[in-house]
Image (cartoon, rainbow, N blue to C red):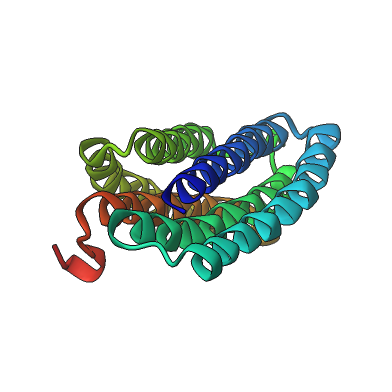
Length: 219
């Protein structure tokens, strides 16, 4: 029975890593779609999201099957529980990537404030790095890397606050373009949410390895 459990857990890991790879690629495409105002890339993000949604269901079914048939304990049980939660986080990041790609309609215009563009790029780079770090920590079961992801969230939040302040100023100076400013703000908000989801994955990796729940300042 233990051998069968380990085989199914190894297969579950492979499937989660596959979903992770697709989600990471989707976020990269979404950011390119925004910065290049590319409708073809935006369409690719939407198409990939359908694949991510289908895989999310498959992974959830695998987890429930393992719980029902093998009744895992200790680290195996924590891993399956964490995957159930991570799976939802990954699917959500796929949705956020679609939202970000939709922002291509408001990006790329000559009226975009240069400082805003620079900060948006920096925020996108940090959010992508957090996602990559969270996925690497999951693959390696590396709690030190997971904690680096948690620490990086403050920088993304700082960029988001900076963008909000910039946009308030721009809306005051250019009220006729308020709708465009709101569109950019939604792109930034979705990036901030990507960072939050990456934080969730890192927290669940720590839970899997250490059995410690660290949300809300615990642990």
